[in-house]
Length: 78
Length: 231
Image: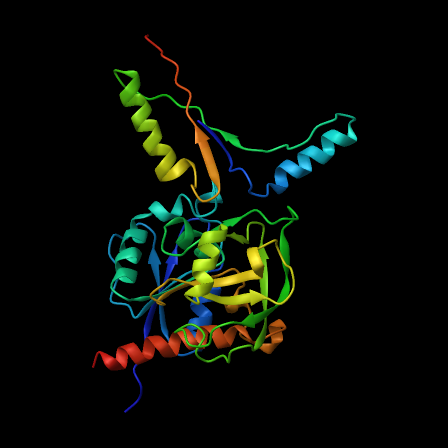
């Protein structure tokens, strides 16, 4: 899961990172800092896994007032 | 007949650090203050609940995001739904916002720095159970100490809250990047309040200010009236 500050929400952490990168000579703008949550779920199919992870994001991992999220699934058949 | 002592519960989460100050201050205003452990599934017989400051569950993920799922929080939500008085201070405010009992969310301070100092506040409403010993427009000095105290609501929500007079306290100067300098809000019903400043740290002039007494004694007296009404 990729959780990031919503568009239009001030991200002071992103601003601090951006100004540090600029000091290093990188020409960057709009830096945003989010968070990655990696985990394993034991589901038999992708759609139920997605639904479960979706619920995790809504209930705990992201606060919808300020954060948006994306879900990326990978299969592990072992 | 002596007036009854209201019974006020102070929730204790692992990582809380202001629970004892809250207990002491409430007792100083003649409340019977008792601790409630976070794993309790039911609250004892209480007239009010205080969620104290600290760093519950390490404040992992987002402040208050884990604590809101503590067993005792379901009991607090039920208590609030029945009209019970609930005050969240600092981390307690963050928990109440994450739990959806108060509007908005508390974010990292705009400066990214921890702020720890006395701040001037303006009382926007003096007709809540938490501020009825104040007067509207009054200035109070109460300390803050937080890294994540910037209250945020989007435009629509903020306008709604202003319309319903749910903003109770504002900082008289910029402190943390909080939207419109909001320092404390109530729920629509007016029985749940959260604030970032720490009234329990400002109840004696020896500590630099005793203005926190206006908030805590309002709560204790409101709780006492409820005890009396129940007789």
